[in-house]
Every structure is written in C-alpha cells, then in structure tokens.
Length: 343
Image (tube, rainbow, N blue to C red):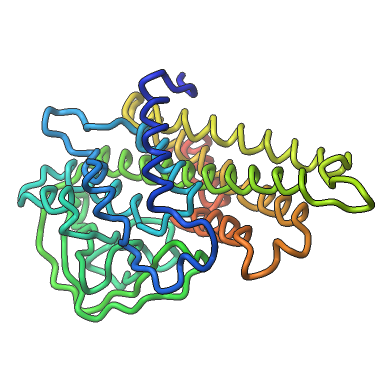
C-alpha cells in the first residue's frame, strides 16, 4: 500500500507547481475572454501532454505523477483541460495501440481532444448512441474520443464535430460541449481491463484536482483569518474559526491520502482493485468537496460570496469534479455492487 510520495516525485511536484502557476489564474478577471487552451503550448513544451505514452511498454509517467500534476493544476484553477484532453485521451490512445499515430499530434499540442460522456456524466459515452456531451476539448477545432461498443468488444473511435455548442458549466474553469454531426474513425480495440484502468486513472485525476482546489482554498482562507479583524482581534483567534479550519484541513489531508493511494494503484494493482481504490477516493473527495467548500465560505463570510472574490471559483471547481464520472453516491453504489454482489 502506497499513499506517500518519494523524493523524485516530490521534485516532480515542485516543477509541476511552477508550471501550474504559469498557466493558472489568480482572480476572476483572469478568465474573462481567455482562451481555454491559452496555456496548452506551455504544457506541450514541458513534455506533459503525452505522459501516458507507452513507447517502452510502461507509461512515461505513473498514476502518481499524473495525480500530483492534477493536484497542482487544480490548486491554480488552470482552465486548460489537462485531465480529459491529455491524460484520459492519451491513456485511451496508448491502450488502444495508437494504430493511426494519434499520440504524436496530442503530444505536440496540435491535436486537442475531448472525451464523450453519457448524458448524466457518469461514464464514457458511446459513439453509437445518443450521447453528445463532451468533457474538455476544443469544440469544432478539435477531436472527440468515444467508445464504440459491439457486444463484448469495445473500440476507441475519433471524430471531429462540426456543430459543437459550449454549455454553461457550474465551473468557470472547466469546459463542457454539446457535440453534433461527428463522423467517426475507428481506432484500436480496448479490453475490459483497459477500460477499468482508464476509468481508474480518470477518477483519480478528478480526485487529485479536487484536493488541489480545496487545499488552495483552505490555505487562502486561513491567511485571510490571520488578517481580518473583528471586535478588535484577528478572526483566526476565535476558537470556532480554528475548529472549522482544523476540521477542514484534516478532511483534505485524508482525501489526499486516498487519492495518492488510488494513483499508485492505477499501475500497481489488478485492474479491478485499482478501480475500487479510485472509486473510494472519488467518493471521499466528492464528500469533502461540499463540506470543505462550505467551511471556506463560512470563514470568509460575506466577501467570499461576491463575484470578485476567488473563493467561489474553488467551490465551483470541486463541484464540477464531483459531477464528472459520478458523485459519491454513484461511486458507493458501484463499490457495493462489487463488494456485496461480486459484479
């Protein structure tokens, strides 16, 4: 069992933190008129877009490095859709054998991918059905990846939409699209184990992104409590504020441990166990996504409710992460199916 990171991974996280700061946002005004992919070439030039490529059999980066990077991007509210458009897309392409050389365009940053989801956002979408919600991507300027199911066989397919519509999203730093008129091109086959591991990686990335956003929100409000004065003293001296902040810190730390264990499990455990670990982490992070956001907003008070304050951006980010690929109830139901019924 691994929920700690080694020295090399700590160094990687420090580099990731600097890159994330260069592509993230610091205040709500930063998102006005900003291109969703404005930092994409920075990520590409840093060699971060094709970390799941398997030129030598194993991915360039493990699930742990992916989680650490997602944590930093979440903490800086980076609008670039790294998780769907690089991590999930890259893992799907690599696991399907990259039969048409799609990874090269992804790694260079020239090709931008979105991931087709079901209408309720709980799973990857089917190219042969009515699913039309796309997570990440660049609309008509990019490609969409989907699954083509035929009985027990599953194949990765790629298409370029010609009638995409951006959707209003709860998060102001995450994109969803409604795609239309997609002509699909067949890619390679995916096994049941491949799908379990890709799903585990995606859930882990979402969990890490949540941890990053909530951790940054909590650090911000703790600093605020050291400066804001009421009744002649700093509000951070009030026992109620201290207890709220301490409870939130413990919750985030616990969720981070769950996410890091799931990240290690992605490549180290059997596919089924890796998926269970990822679902457990997602359920834990989804739960604290609400409670910690509530705590942060409570400590900020009125100023945290204003549009001009960054606090609600972290809250929105965490709630978006919760919804994609299923909230805690969805994950707990899936875990129960396996543990109680052996599905």
